[in-house]
Image (cartoon, rainbow, N blue to C red; front, side):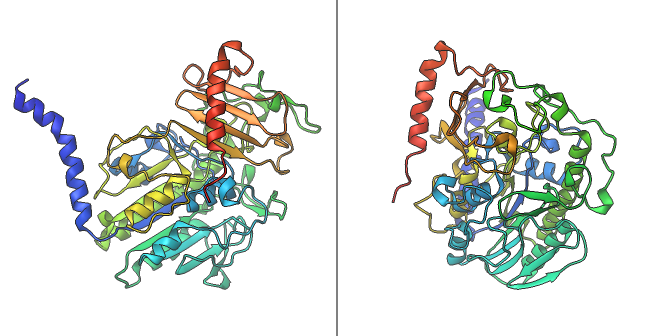
Length: 473
């Protein structure tokens, strides 16, 4: 190959990154749209390799931006994960450690900093940190739902006034968000659209538990136009689905009134169908938002993010809705970012991206003052394709509650690296777990008792000690 050809091949990616950076430096701060889904797994959409679902708009978002292949929730539970996304802090540092009635009105959230930097900010949907629907600080427009919200004919609190709206919740929230975007205002905007999908239709109780009130199997309620789209379909399963745990003492405990985990406790195809039928309306919502931004000439000047609070079990290890555990299916989430001013289309970063990284990322993109108290770090270097020094380990934490009897007293601190995962249960003695994810990506062989694993476990314990240190004052 001639020298000039080799130089052009080597320099082209660098020149592209330089062009993106120069262009962004001259432009005003971008608008931002964050779509947060509830319980969406990392593999629930086509661009992640799922050939069963219909997600054309989500797949297009992935093709036109970055799709992180190793994105994770640091607490696989609704309220703590949502607080971590908004604050950039681990649950132990933001104070929202479970789904009970913990105050969330004074959290140091990134929308407040964007608001102070001149952004017009709007929240739409499921707050789910405390069951009340009262407006939280940091938002110029608030359209919130109490607790879990309702799938059909929901009640909204709009800037302090409650009213009931006829229709399907995903469509109605999208309507509200688009009205906000269309308002004549020269300031950049943030839309934080927290969908109810893909969560069952339930009533949230004060102790953090919930009761299904309506819906298909599992309580899932798709939009009427989508009900039955996947009826009778058999969904592909990971090879650990329905496998009874044989070396996980914490899951093998005998629980009165509950069958042992195994093939009989997997998530049914009917439940999966209901969940994925709810996703159809979210995909249409994204398409509507994209179209509205394009019509207004704002599409390429808007950062669009799609992610989830945590994953969901489709029968892996025999588990169903006990999504609080530290296994891959519960902690891995989708994370898609479109912003052509700084993000090359089709980028697939493979470094660890965490929920706590969202806040510092959007603050940097919005040129707002950074929050020095965050545990996360900005993903901008990865979005720009730069080879930056990066984390090699991260913390997964869960604080036990009484919602699911099977996982009672299963609070834990866990550490994951590229190759290994160590789970230390706080209240269960002799039941810890250790996995070599390179050799055992499905987490079927607990190696905690092997003498040969001891040196690696000592290193991981040191990582865990570092990651669980108290926050800086």
